[in-house]
Image (tube, rainbow, N blue to C red; front, side, top):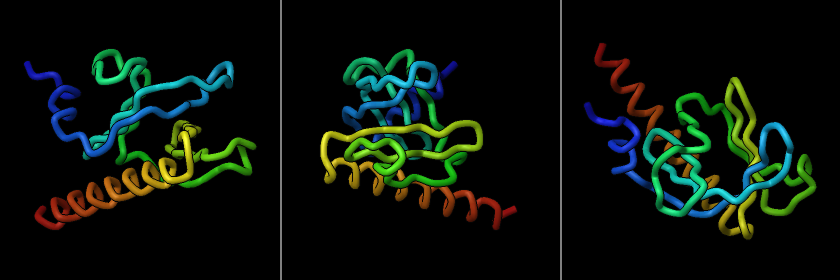
Length: 121
């Protein structure tokens, strides 16, 4: 049986280091993030695609936007899903905008693909 994550990781759109605020302790941890056409993953190590620390399905994301006022940290953005809000920090503004743009673009493509398949029904 094929591992769906390994299949998905054949479609990497962007990857790189971001800081992520942990859910429980609210401390910031460095993670390797990988964006595919359907999912945003985080891993503890660069280019070691096993045991993701987060799996965010893009179909569940309602918004992605800057949130420096909320976090009081530069270059931060948040990803809202029905179950959770993820707070992330890039190393600089250009990197932050690159991630927001890439995730937003992937969300639009996913929604267009879904709409086309809904129209075919």
